[in-house]
Image (cartoon, rainbow, N blue to C red; front, side, top):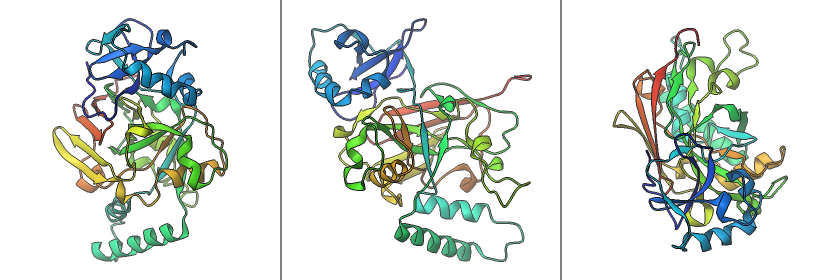
Amino acid sequence: MATRAQSAGPFALGTLSTPDGDPFPGLVVQDRVLDLSRALAWEPADVRSLLARWEEALPALHALAGDDDLEWRRLDGLRVHAPVEPRQVFQSGANYRQHVIDLEVAHRAPDDPRTAEEARAEIAAVMDRRAVEDLPYVFTGLPSAIAGPYDDVVLPSWAEQPDWELELAAVIAKPAYRVPVERALEHVAGYTIANDLTDRAGVFRRDMKAIGTDWLRSKNAPGFTPLGPWIVPAGSIADPGDLRVTLKLNGETMQDESTKDMLFGVARLVSYISGTARLLPGDLVLTGSPAGNGMHWGRLLRAGDVMEGSITGLGVQRTRCVAEEAGA
């Protein structure tokens, strides 16, 4: 099964189960797990209910993590699920400067008169203007796209250009509505890893160019958002704006960039989203993906591919792509 490699801090949170048992919220310390539905007085049924009482839970979790006399289980042999089932998923688009520049060049029309250098310069100017004008771009995803960090990714037969997008995801604890940037991080319980898969061929509606993007079709197939393995508390991450995001495809590094390249950090995104929507415990804020996706490399996902994604201090997820069965 999986290990807690590279996870920062004294503990992390996860959702686990025995091979044939029901999932339970787990406190993960090194190579062992504590069932929090039994260890905490209020018996939380899942990680989301734990996040709903985060201010009360956090000191209790610290105390439990240091208690060797509890009923700890070995992590080996347990199935690791997505660490939380969110009610809402908010996704930040075009948030890494170099990533957007690369996409613009890759998506140029065959008759585009610009050279690659001219296209890069133009979109770089657009990105710099967006940063100055302080306008994040956020859309919503479906919870049904969430999958576990080691689950197979089924590539739908209709997906012509399936691509990877490894991202830092913030996990909400305290509900947030119209919160200022200065207080936004108070609402973040911790961080995890998301791979926001995208069918590039489905992003732009060819039949309705004036309407623009079709995120439902391009991003929300079942299992298109592998999540986890763990939620690492925010207090264990010194600076979410200075983490390394790395994705390997079949052992070859494709993405390897710092979150420093984000136009808008976690606090700004949480504040911006909360200006319109009410963020709830367990909700996810995906912060965008750095340069190095498949369109840049001219190599899209296919059956048999193995993706390994890591972010500093958050562990490693590993997923294998499989073809959709005929008639599915």
